[in-house]
Length: 327
Image (cartoon, rainbow, N blue to C red; front, side, top):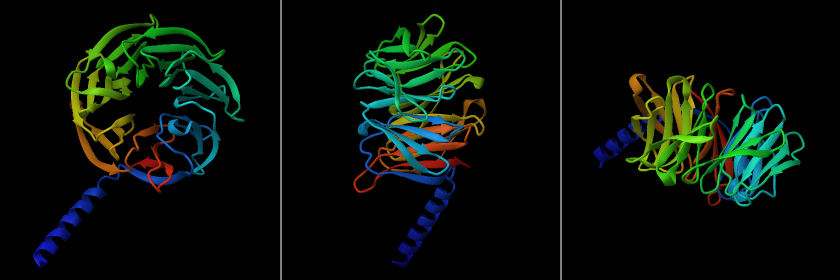
């Protein structure tokens, strides 16, 4: 019996030491969101004003969090399955895609009042901003990527895709858009000038590709897959997969930390995975950080040097936003 207890104590000691090594993210604050039910979707950030905008999809609200004070300061209500969120710094406006009614709603960044609405974007989802061209991109419908003019919020063009788009990334120096199209088992590549698909990169071994991140400087595209749970790395010049890593299940967001050459991956299984990228397209999966089941939506701000995780309500545990600092 004494031997068994000794072995158990040693096991716990090793496990504890192993967990200690996992502090790639240090928890700074927890922001409670009482009354917020259901799952979350995407985030946006106001860096100068240190505000975080969180689409509470299941609650039909947009939650506004003061990052510096670590507290919720406002809720925009009356939304319909809010998904993608965008903050326009120069205009001080917040734009929210609504999957249920196909609208793209714009609110004043100071008073949070309705300012404009773009329509006819059925199942509107992910949103991105092309700062150089001053254009907004919205994935929507059974397969399309819309281009919207933020001066008048009118749709200028739409590129057809083979199925509904999930996460997508825009090159800053180039003209390409990389789009996850999980139902078509591919990454579609769009030319922004031509507004057409110029390539389709198949995903055969690893599928259900939802989150995506881009390391444009090193010509790497990171794609998170759920079937099976895997991170796939594409060479954006050759269009070929060059590496893959095991990750936790039910991933929905991933971010590239260029300063530390790391990937942060939030997974609904209840973990944040961190992959340390090494030379020659190799990488090391660091010990994962336990969170809560269903906490798969996140955001990383390189400007603030902080990582944000949306944790949904479960039983008696209220919904919350966790704010981490990379270590």
